[in-house]
Structures are given as C-alpha cells and as structure tokens.
Image (tube, rainbow, N blue to C red; front, top):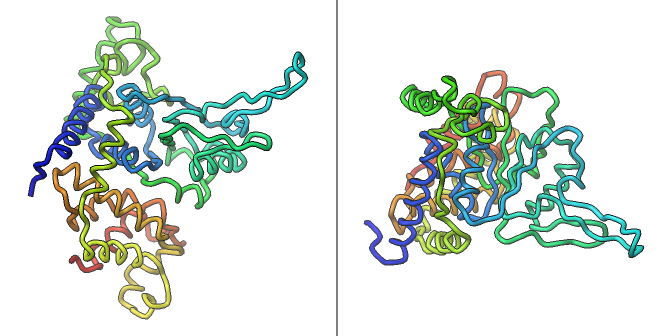
Length: 359
C-alpha cells in the first residue's frame, strides 16, 4: 500500500527534490544517486568503484553542493601522511605551547578520492574516524562533526601504486557501489551537453561548459549533463534526520528479518553449510570468509530505506534483494577458485539470492 501520512509525504518530497537536482548534473546512474542518499540517511559511509570518467567524484561534489553540509576533498596519494588527513600539533614559539591544527577530515562530507592509493598508516587514521567518529591528535581525541560521512572512490583497473584496503576498513563502509558505463542514449546526452567545449564556444576543457574546475579527478569527461549548471540547496541535516526517522519507522516483519539473516549466513562457509555438498560445490568453495552480522544490520537498514524510496511503509523481500549487492559485495573474501573461474562477488551474491528461500 502507499503511505498516506504527512510525515512520509514530506520524505517523498525531499527525495524527489534531491533526485531532480542531482539529475541536472548527473545523467542516468540512478543506483549511484540513490546510493549516496541511502548511505547518508543510514549514517554510513560509501565506497564508489568505477573506471575514470563515470562521474564518481562529480556525483559526490554535486551532492555536497545541493546540501547544506560542510565538504572537504582529500586526494589520496602514496606519500600522504596521517597528519595531512586528521591534523597535527603545531608549536607556537610566542606562547611556548602546542596548538591543534585540524585536518580536512573535520567536515560533514569527506571525499576520499582514490582511497586505495594511501598506505596502511593513513588507512589506520581514517579507520578511527569512520568507526568512532573521532580522531586522536597527540594525547587528545577530538569528535568529528555530526553528521559525518566518508565517500570514497577507487579505480578498479589501475592497480600500480595502490594498496589493498584492509578488511576492517572495508567492513566500515555501509555500501559499495559499482558505477557502470552509461547506456548509448545516456552517453549521447552527455556528448550533446559537452560538445560546446570543443567548438571554442566556452573556455572549459573537455566535458565542461564553464571551466576546468568541473572535471572529475582523473581529468576525464564525467557522466554529466552540464557540470556548469547552477544548483539549489535542497537537502539539509534536518532533512536527513527526517528521512532517517521515517526509514526507522518502516516496518519489517520477522519473516523478512529471518530472510536477511539467512542470506548473510549463507555466505559463511561453516560446518553446517559444508554438509550440503550441492551448495558447497555450487558456490561455497568460492568464499574464504563470509559477511559478518554488521552486514545483516546494514541490509536491514538499506532495505527499509529502499522501501521508503518506493513509497511503502513496510519491507518486502524485493527490497532486500535490491539492497543485497551493494551491502555485501565488499564484505565477501573470495577464494582462489573464484578468481580462477572468473567469478565476482556479485556473481556469488546472485547465487546466494537464488538459493535462499523467499518468505
């Protein structure tokens, strides 16, 4: 049934305004647009993975522009130090004392661009921020702004000079979105919107209509309708709090909760599942380590938000299925056999969803 009360109507209006404003810059990429808002409603972090030029960075910057939240962008590089991220103590000779100079992580929205290019010591500093919403400088821990979200990007094809993210950090990301190529029709729209840059009509570089500052971090054309178009601020911290409250009130039946737990448990190659030779031969041999209970919690939260986006005040199994890939693809540690057979985490998740009985 459709939700008719005033509170949910307000949430639908917020979501509609958000999607409309994002579409002024981003062509297609509905899962990317909704995924960013989903993570922020849930109060979680998001990992965006895709080849250069697919508007990952632009989407995050656009979200920051249409929100009333503070925003900082950090370009991760191999020589980045923890102090460049969280800040450091600065000695003042005039007062003969140390003062704290806070780093760019002190913002509501932090864009960690090409996050896998920073070494382990930087990842450790970011892990405290993501897990505890605080950072430690010297002997003192400082709380981060509320709300606080890390929106990280990484390139899956260029691995030279990169560092694999530790599993503990990956598990702190609420969802991981794989950003696809646009369809031919969407790409044609992108080209039409960007064609003025090649005629000398505008001073911007390729893919821009107003200047070089609107290209994505790679310098390639982003999947953008018009990066120079002006945007309105349509979502605030209060709006996120309203959406979070409404999502929390979405009902989820015990049978759906059991379905969620069954999906997550089916990714764990434990003794009980290994007794089933058919299941083991089908997919369990491809999993070294399955998802933790944190995945069950995240799947429940994201399923509720998906139901809210669909205009319902209750969760269906279809909401769970829709949220499962983004929630679980970065939480599965695949075995050597998976790589040898050319299988991805999404392939394994699809198999799990086909096996676990739907309530």
